[in-house]
Length: 510
Ligand code: HEC
Ligand code: HEC
Image 1: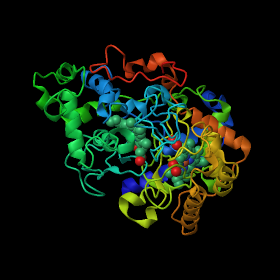
Image 2: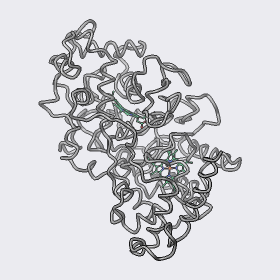
Image 3: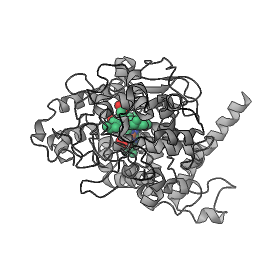
Image 4: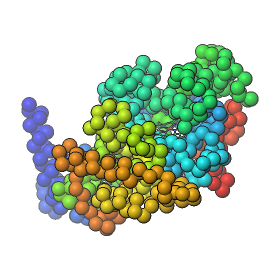
């Protein structure tokens, strides 16, 4: 009781402090020289940072692997090997490249049957020029920081959601076990559990002919046998030096059938991805005390981000909370639904509902992290918005922005679609599906279940928010040298002659 009361008064004091423009803390007034050097906005932001307890390291209390350790190194080789796909033409990196923000630069991914499997970003197409994967490829950066769930619809989900544990403590439900049920094969954490699924998807990696109609476990076992060169997979790779790589990584002299299991493949893949922590952004530097790290615009943007819509802010922190900038929950936002959809309605995607079976969850998606957001365009679960300005216009007025999107055929301005003939009639139900999601948002706002307030920000404030969002990006992620430890080398990381050395559409290596 006493503790609660103390906390409450402490909180109240901080709230007062955050709303005061000057004289926060201390004996009040203008006594401290450090304070007098702050602008009013810096002081306001300092109050927000204090009251919300933002000045913590995103890594606090977590252990993450080092990319130079043997297991992440094996994981890198596997992540870049096309041998994990049915027809040996797609690697994990084909949709999650370190130099494309841990994603693919496309609205919707092109997985199997790309005409030029090495090409990534614009120019990665299959024979019909249309993407077959229904959702935007999310970044794999900072996947070690998720404690609730992975995927846009959270279908790989920690049952206990313990803070700081990456899903390692309680069970993890997956598409194999079903919603709310622990998958006994999920492995150590959310990232390992997730790594078992891309290889089972026809559109992403498997293709239709490989292990056609077989169970997920048969697909995984076959791929492990291929990598291990034993049983049903023996001889499938013309070159195969994987056993040495596994023996080194696991410091083991076991044979392939024991060592090269899909569990160990998933483990290595997850340790590689979990080593990709990129959180040294200007914003983090600011939190760490470098008040010169943010521009004036970014500071104003931060204030808008953390201020409620009732107080004329953006209310973004309602959902994009914590150092990952996500509450890990699912919400209706109503970004346009484009592409082939998830097998419901006509090209529609019901989001979280398809996992829980609860119609309240229709059109809800997991709040994305905003770390490194500058390098992960296009945005949203279907990659409909090309840039942050579009996203911010949507928040200010969802209906008008979605209307404009369809009135102006903005789909056909997206690089991936601009050269597709008949683009304007590709997904005829797209507008209607998108408006169903907006109607759902209205309903939620009417009945008070939405955390999406009525945002009223002008063009200048949008620019300020954009400056803040851009300041959430770690400069390492745009620096090839800084990223090189995470990118497979054509010689050192190529045990099967199937390494993906990705290029842009003009043939320049990424
Ligand atoms: C064809 C493109 C493609 C390939 C290949 C691919 N992915 Fe993905 N990945 C996606 C898409 C799309 C999603 C989101 C799907 C969804 O949420 O429904 C995703 C989601 C993820 C996530 C979840 C991220 C988050 O924040 O929720 C991780 C981790 C991931 N992929 C890792 C991998 C690994 C490991 C492999 C290789 C075994 C792989 N991916 C292969 C496209 C791809
Ligand atoms: C009600 C919860 C909620 C609020 C409030 C909210 N967001 Fe979001 N945000 C989401 C969800 C959910 C998505 C994904 C929606 C989708 O893909 O359809 C998203 C997507 C985004 C994206 C695209 C991320 C990506 O990787 O594609 C950005 C950028 C973004 N939000 C910024 C903001 C800003 C800035 C604000 C405040 C003006 C804000 N959000 C307010 C829940 C929220």
